[in-house]
Length: 384
Image 1 (cartoon, helix red, strand yellow):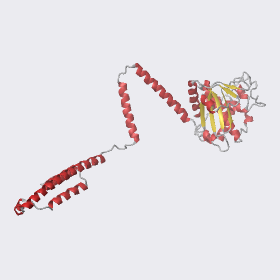
Image 2 (cartoon, one colour):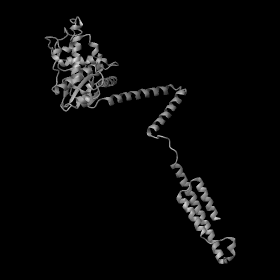
Image 3 (cartoon, one colour):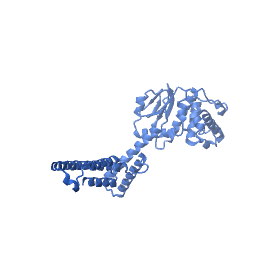
Image 4 (cartoon, helix red, strand yellow):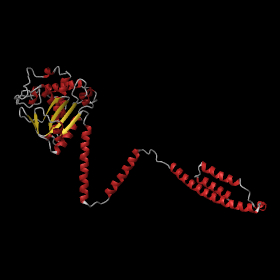
């Protein structure tokens, strides 16, 4: 009887594919033990002594109990092994990467969004709160983009950050910028201007072993005032120690930002000039591109009328124009900075109708191409 039960159990486990090799061997051992016992078939019952029959009968019950316990144990082990085997061999989706998981979550999110869009939402307060949250989120993303796109070595301080991190104002006074719109617009437009330079340009300028100045700090303030002259410039540039500094009045950083961005490009040309001076490199033929007998007036001189300026009443035809603005005649540095502003605003080709001014702009552009590998290798006509 026991032998038959074990045989059926063995066949059952094999059929369910839940019998690991060690369980199979355990069944064989039990069958083998039972076969090696005394033959208790009907034919031999008469030859067994009475006491031995009792002993054998008692032994059979013990064997049956032990076998039953063993069967329960084997069955439990079989179930456990079968469960583990099923988990181990459970089919996995192809390409089960974190990217697919994210995509699946996005699909679920899109599905939920579509369901929400299809539903009729009548709670105006809920819609208003949701819109405000979206606006705040978009503003945060904009600010993050501005900060993350600033080239290495350049730091932007705005508002109270200028007071906390700079302090010294190089002969100028400034009002602390508190208007959040001006701060945001200023940062956005600084980022836009910096993005106009070829990739690697600021790395090349700020990491040059021949120049000790390794950083550029751009400060966004309120109104600026020249302590010496009393003038209120849009911005100014200087250097101190191992850093270049550019201060900008961000009140000019309006929605379109044209004036602010052009003025920042002007001030950054001063930084380029400081850098080239530190390397002992200048503009060897600059004087050849000036009107005959011309001399710069000097900073602060009266230059309300210049016969060579585009806006001057003396410039009766295009051949008379050598400068874009009368401010350019103060010094060579201001002249070059104004040229860069016009290149930023309009590009070189715009000024072809003014042959002298166009030639001076082209010369400045050629000098920058000569000195900066990042400009030569940018793959496009920078400031063209």
